Image (cartoon, rainbow, N blue to C red; front, side):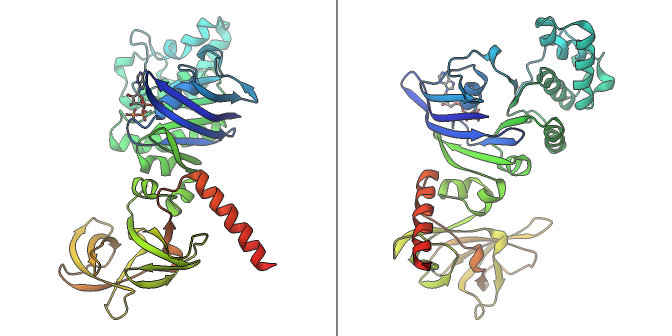
Length: 364
Ligand SMILES: Nc1ncnc2c1ncn2[C@@H]1O[C@H](COP(=O)(O)OP(=O)(O)OP(=O)(O)O)[C@@H](O)[C@H]1O
């Protein structure tokens, strides 16, 4: 439906987007996730038509739209600060664009009421904006954006002005609204938890490049590189050696794993999530470590240990331990995730393809 191919954008001599390619399907919830200044809003502005690319193509339903102005695109944006009209009441805010398009009065009433219904504000049509809470204003902004029946709804840090509790509620509401409407949402955030909770698909942007693109589960379980592993969730990222396919050496000990496609004895990094590690006795442990700190967090303890090679590990456990104690760490082969240094999505896809070809030959 929407396709970026090799899109570049610079402001003066500052290259903001280096080479962005992705494809967006109809009816899904996409999230663009990345640290501040990574280029997320710039991508959204290119989709909306507020900015134009300096290279590459943007296509919508097969047509190139590089230079098509914002008002000619079937896209609407919900801004972080809502950008509502303070002197208009709720109904008139939502009706504004339809009036500009000279839609007839009866249809305006029907469409505005339908949009307000969808965001649970049917009883608020006559309210002034200063009589609304932050969450209600946010919903007016969404109603105003969906009343135009866009094919794509862009949401730029749309929940960041809300307090923690309201933000959680709105995450669920937005997700439900997207399913009910069946239109594509493209949501920009720098909050990884929000991205994991809401999206069908996440694109992780850093320095104007896509670091990884996939489902929340893919990205959490199979981070492609150090940046993604570090940015998404809590991780232990430990230097290791890939002895051969399916055998990785950590702290001088060899373990089975599920990864392949590396050079023999290639230096790699392994990712192990804190919730996948268990504490046991030194005798039963796969690695030995000393407990350095322990933090009670309600559901579990966050335990920081240091192994015999000096690497720090974080372990989330429902069992308490003792600071200063020597313990053993255990994990399952499927919880070891091996990463090549700074591998990009393109390099990863190429490695996987070669590896799968090689694997197929082996079986012949
Ligand atoms: N109109 C502009 N002129 C010059 N530089 C710009 C312009 N718009 C954005 N930039 C620069 O482009 C870079 C990326 O900005 P962008 O707003 O896309 O980042 P972001 O990932 O959305 O960040 P944040 O999460 O902080 O909003 C920043 O360094 C910013 O200063």
